[in-house]
Structures are given as structure tokens and as C-alpha cells.
Image (cartoon, rainbow over all chains, first blue to last red; front, side, top):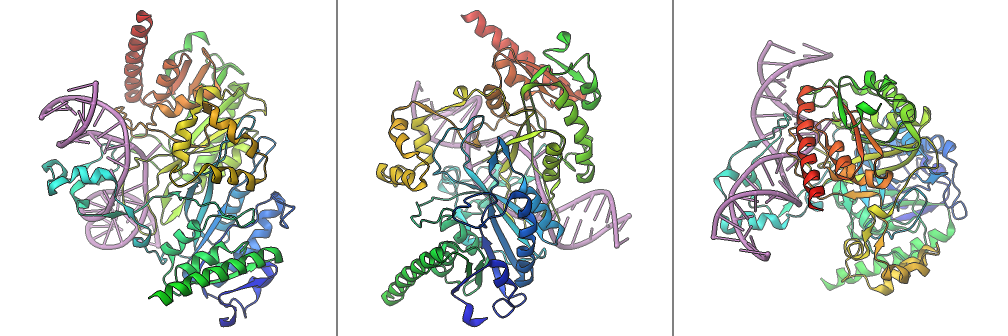
Length: 286
Length: 286
DNA sequence: GTTCCGCATGAATCGATAG
DNA sequence: ACTATCGATTCATGCGGAA
């Protein structure tokens, strides 16, 4: 395995994933990928039709399950397209199939793509969000909330000005919905950072990678920080232009990648070279 | 039918929906509802388990299909819960079943609820979005984009951090997509209003409805503006505290509603009375 | 008016313990 | 082994009265 770390395998994802020399059982900490969508971009990528999609992906996901560490996570970014006025429900079938084959469906994040521009379609508006699924093999997983925490809102400074907390806020208050949920506001008086939530608004920088399905580096970065530690191994079986690798490297993680199109392998390796240069500079500076 | 318009039927949703005196075929312009979620609020509502849910709802949705006008729409707000670390996929089964029984799945809006109740759970963050599905009977539907359009200024401010992204970058972004949108950039700068997108950020939180699951009036309002004209009939078969009725009335539409709990019927009728008072005042003022 | 400040409120889950 | 109950966890927003 060692000699495949921090390298891109050029070839078919399923074939490579099945190779136990490259990917031994329970060897990967995090798998994060945005697979080629069904019926989309067939000019640039070998894709499957909606019907074939679930069946094809099951084989991929079974290998992912095999090579993932017990406490590891599988992050899947996907969005179904609209055809003939209808959303194609293969993403739903896909998720149900993943559950059926043993994955735990932990969460569906909404990736809110704020930089998407308006457009006009009959009977529908611009699609500005994508699904990012979080699956795992077992209940107990690696999960590090601190690195993804965000500054507490401005409301807190007003409310806790001069360290004065009203008596009201010191009391425990219960919701009247009968849920039992309660809150005690002074609990988070001295907090600077708080947990995020499951709608991801990333300040997306335009990617000039020429890869049509590239997500911004902030997306894999967020999950890498949340779900791995330094030197952990992050795999993207549909590497494309290498965004996942960039995110892993710049955060001190190792990457493994598979990509079938030479064009994208070349782009990815160029980007990785650039990233390593930057990292070298940073190390030399210290 | 006439005598049931602008009234709430107290009783079981399915029984009332089956009544052809109340609901003749193809008589409703828009159905918008948030049914009781599975396994939730069982102290306040008779609920279904995840397993029963799809089967139970199919009967409801078949009647909805019968009574909806051909160009009408069906808006469904729902979100599955998490149990034992796993999202319960009954919502997915529900959507697939609706498709199987003849509905066209047109869109899934993301309702981004910034004021969701706080909490901390192992391996997950707080859930701040819900699904809002748009179904229809046929491809050609009533769809009025103008009433929900937003000022371009707001849009640009919201979607872009103008300090960080130059006009040049915006244009480059368009060119990269290769979708022919770049020509329209300059047009947008001059246009006053643009289409919204499929992530709904609503401002209001307040609802003194004493209903544990009320959505803000802005939610039904948005879809009523988008999918109906004045004097059209809007139905909510799970009316709760009457938010859909308020939204219909204040926009010059008619409502029909069903609610099984007397407690909520009373609250809804009180709110509707208040709303009608307000509307009277407004008419007198003219 | 306008700003400021207090405060209500919103579809939750999990582990532990008890029955 | 199964179910029921209980305690613990924690933000952000708009409204309305006060200054």
C-alpha cells in the first residue's frame, strides 16, 4: 500500500478499488468523492444512465466499505438532475441501496452554493444546493468538532456585554412544545466558537480547473477537518482535477486517488505539484 | 362545494378528502401542507411510525391527486428525524411512492431555517433545513414567477461578497460555464428583479400559535404567490393552527382546511378572524 | 423617530437508569 | 432483551418596550 500513498492511480475506479495491494481491508480513514452523475456530461465522462447507476455504484460502495477503517466515514456529494420537468430520483434509490447494503446514513448536508447565478427555466428556478451525504460503517466514528467550529454570532457580545448576564438568562428554560428541549443562555457566555450546522455555506472561490464537476476545495477541506486527524489517509475514487488531494495535502493529511481520464490526471498532478511547492515554501519559512 | 370554502373541516383528513361533496374532482388549485411527521409529537397528534407512514400517506395523496386541477400543484413540507445515529429514510420512500402513483416530482426546495432549536449530539450537528417538495399532475402547470422575484440589488449583495468578487470575476465565471449565460451579465445589472432560487431563506420566526410544528406564514405565502392567482382555492389537509389559511386570505385567495384536533381548529379560527379584521380595515381605508 | 436591550422561541437525540 | 422515563446537551433571530 505504502507506494500508492500520495499518488493518483490512472484507471477504472472499480478495478483499482478491488486491488488489495493498493487498498487492503480497513486501511482508509475517509472517502470523499463526487462521482460522475448519471446522464450528465457524457461528452466528458463515461457515465451511466439513471437505471444502471444504482447497480453500478453498489459495486463501488462495497469496495469502499471493505477498505474503510471501522471508525471511518464516507462522504458522497451528488445531485440528481431534472429531465422532462422531473427530478430524476436515482439519488434516492442510491441512498436506500447504500442503507440496504450495510451503510449507516448519518446525515444529509445541504451544500448551499451561494455563487450560483440566476437562470431561467420553465416551471422551475435555479438549483443552488447539492446533497452531501455522510455514511459510516458503525455508530462510533472519528468526529472532531473543534476544527470546523465558527465564531459565535454578534448577538452574543450584545447579550453578554460587560460580563453582565441577566438573571433570566441564568435560569433554565424549557420549550413549550413538549419536546423537553431546554436552554440556559449563560452556558455559552464565554464561548468564542460554536458548532456549525448542517447547511454548508462555503465562500466558494471560482475554480479554474477545467474540470466540469469540480467542487471548491473548501468542501472536502471541511469534511477532512471534521473526520480525520493529521497523517490520516483520504481517498477520492473519482479524483477529477484533484481537489480532494489538494485539500488533504494542505491540511497535513495523505491522499490516494483514482481517475480514468488522462486529461484530468495531468491537471491534478500539476495542481498537486503547485500545492507541494507552496507547502515547501511554508516549511522553509519556519 | 361552495359552502365549504373559507371554512375548516374538523375531522380525519382522509375521510374528508374522500367526500366528493366537499371536494369534487379537479376543484383545487394548490394543496400545501406539512403533515404530522413520523414518530413525532405523539403526545399532541396521532402519528404514524416510519413503517406505516408511506402506506398511510398514499391514501391521502391519491385523494389529493383526484381533487387537484390539472394545472395545479402539490407542496409537501417534511423532514425525517434521526434515530440511533441514523436518518430514517421514510421520506425517500414516500417520494418514490408518490412518483410510482403518478405524481411528477418537479423540485425539492431547501427551506433553510436559521433559527432551528440548538442542541448537541454525538457525531452530528443541528439540523437547520427541511425539505419542501413540489409535485404536479402534468408537465404544464400554473407558474407565476414575477410575484416571487427579488430585487437584483439584494440578490447581488446576498449571493456575492462584493468586496471579494469583481465584475470581471463574475463575467469570467459565466464564460467558464460555457452555457451562454455570459451575454446576459450586463442585462442583469440593469434589470430590477430576478428569479429566486431553490433555497428558501425566510426571515420570520414568531408564531404564537401554540402549535408545536407551525411553519412561518412566509412559507405557504411564497408558494401561493408562485402557483396561484387571486380567488384560487388553496387546501391544507393538515391545517394545524391555520397558517396556510392566513397566507391564502392575506393574498386574496380562498382556503379550505382540514384539522382533527379541536384545540387547533379553535386557534386557527381565532387567527382567521383576526386576519379578516385586518383585511376589513385595509379595504375600508381605501 | 431611532437605537438599545431584554426576552421568547424554534418538528431533537442520546446515554443511563429503572421497570 | 425490551420499553419507559429522565437528565444533559446548546444558537440566532425578531419583536416590543424602554431609553
